[in-house]
Each structure stands twice: as C-alpha cells, then as structure tokens.
Length: 191
Image (cartoon, rainbow, N blue to C red; front, side, top):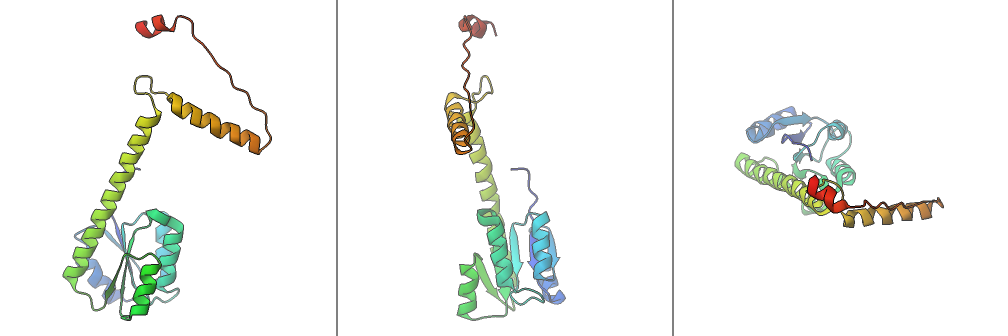
C-alpha cells in the first residue's frame, strides 16, 4: 500500500457546526468539509479518508445512506465513520451502528470527547495500514525466493492450478513446458 497522508472528512451542512468540528480535530490530521451527502461521496471516490464525521440530516441524501454507500463501496477498507447528530434516539443510533458506523455522538458535542475518539480511530487506521503492509511483505516472502528473486515452487504450482482451471473453464487448450539445465551445480557455483 502506498504512503498515506491521514485525512478527516466532515460531512455537515451547517457551516457553524462544520467549523466547530474542524477546529476540534484539525490538529490531529488535515480536514476536508463536505456540505452534502453527494459531495462527500464524490470526495470519497478521489481521496482516502481515515475518519468521517457524518451528520444524519443533510440537504440531499441522509447520513444513513451516505454511510451505507461508503461501507458498500469500500468494505473492510472503509474509514471509521462517526455519526455526529442531534438525533438522540436509540433507534437512530442502532441504525447508524448497524450500517457500519463505529461511533455515534450527540450534538452539542464535547470537543475533548470528539478529539479523543478521532485520535483513537486515526490510531486504528494507522495500525490497519501497517498490518496490510506487513501482510504484503509476508506474502512476498512466502512466494518469492530471496536468492533468485523469482517465484518459488509453491507459488508456481498455485499459478499452474489457476491457469489450468481458467483454461478448463473457457474450454481452451494449454501446454506446459519443462526445462532442465545440464550441469546446473556448476552454473550455481559460478554465479
């Protein structure tokens, strides 16, 4: 995974509320504000966000739909979504969390609580990226020979099985060629 600059998205149609939230979390990571659900979804297509602070009541589509679309599009790579809303009933909170949000805060917010929660979720995002990077390294170690930097035997057999399955599925012919180098020990010893 390429290097990643952390970023927070605030989805809030009230300019005042957006400014309060931005001021609260801007020292943790850069902040981008979207005033509507569709604007937020457009931003999500072009940029990676670690945390989304999302209001439910928006001028176009509601925050529940925005959350659903983000989670549907990004799956396990979706950012941590925190609803920040004046809708303070259990049914809405349950609905938001069931759609994939990780937290639910009521307005008016307590700045120190918002900051602490966003800081925690940014930390989770860093840990997830580190885990993805380490898994990629492990996969490379498991499939590539460190001396020759070519695929190892196990990976070769996985690729062969995959290609034979593909050829069978599409009713295509295939061939396998085996090569042998005479006196390979002397080549190995020399090079």
